[in-house]
Image 1 (cartoon, rainbow, N blue to C red):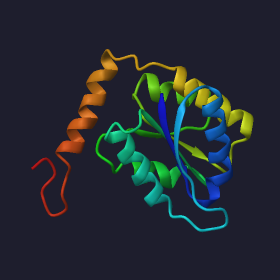
Image 2 (image 1 turned 135 degrees about the vertical axis):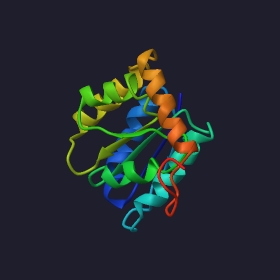
Image 3 (image 1 turned 90 degrees about the horizontal axis):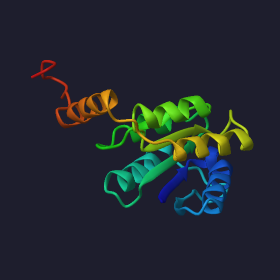
Image 4 (image 1 turned 90 degrees about the vertical axis):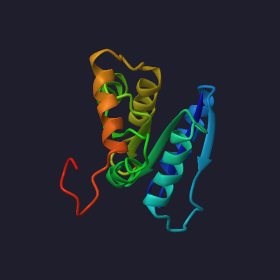
Length: 156
């Protein structure tokens, strides 16, 4: 599997750990990490990974910032991305099985190395269940295609 990995400056060390872990699992990794010591803006990295996933240049994406919140907000602005901020194996599994999350967002500050590896493993090994969840994921895609524009009445 081809997995795009990126981070801002606060998540750089964790992103390097994730890159190594994914390679050890046999995945191809497209890493775009900030230069050590250089500030890096999370929206830029989220857009880069989101576009790689949406264009199918990568099968999945992983993003890391201090909390993971900024990355998830920014990545979800890319049409076709379903980015999920998760904190444990349970939410990682549900993000994939119920929401077909194709980008995983993690906190570089709040999770330890073993926890992150377990989260990654669970997310990758979990399959999307489809069924009733497929209908809901399709509704998300419809929202993306018919995005509300400021100044228009909702639902116009």
